[in-house]
Image (cartoon, rainbow, N blue to C red):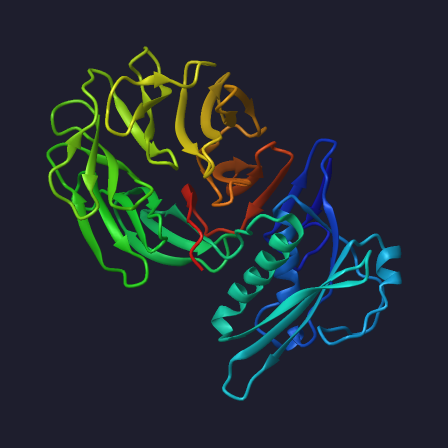
Length: 415
């Protein structure tokens, strides 16, 4: 086991990555502090390094003494090869006359001595973190072939004292902005497929009611305020409708409802408690939790209704389903010996594995590239937002607002 991050690099105060297990293949990469970043509000090189390390696919290499470098430097790659790096990132940050910042970088293949390309951004001080995340996305895609998720966003809820807050933050948990504050509980945030809206449940009218909230403007609309409980919104992949849990006709049952509201359509007729619906990425089926077999388990039903099919079989308490964007993986929380642990199941084989050693995990949500899962837990006595690779070998604790952290949801690719 290796621990790197906060302990070794105090500047990354809240950033911590844990690497466990053997056989973890990581690409060695050196990221030089960007020229001029000491005078900038954000340390671009450190943000890029943290993003790539948190993905689990990169291993930062300590740069050798090589003088001041930037994207225009003529490189001698031999000291970088000797340091063990396969790739090198150099760049600069400079303030423009209009107050914005010019950020430039270049990626080098150290082994071949080849220029892998670069980009430049002219951004306000407030968007410097976004520029750093976009640089990390460029490098991730260039070196892995997959799209990076560092410039996406997450939403999560905190309870501090008697105050609830719905936060929208960068994918590393930094730069949190409050979307809603309330003295009443806020639960079940769910990003729309475009990333422009959040559905959630608010108790501000002293009962659970579903709202849809425009993230950019803060405007919101009531989606479901029927008799009884209105809860657990999950967006259809086309964004035109949502699945919700309503108790308008008695027990908790699944319905679908147009994204603009209207009369809901009941999906199933059941005497059981059916809840937590989430659409499969192809929109053809809905995964949900039901106690119809005597204990909470994950089931799947066609999105037009029909006969449900049980999906989880191990243990007697499996809840909080999340489906990977490629439809291959199911993340869920299973109670094992009194502990609530994050599990990942490969759906074609039905093989499920616990990927944490914590005991209070909740609310898993996949990154839009399907490579990571974000979840809430308690670690060392503290509430924490965590990400994990699907094999559980690499975990990172994200920055987060203080208080009781709950219910993270990872937004889609948008920017």
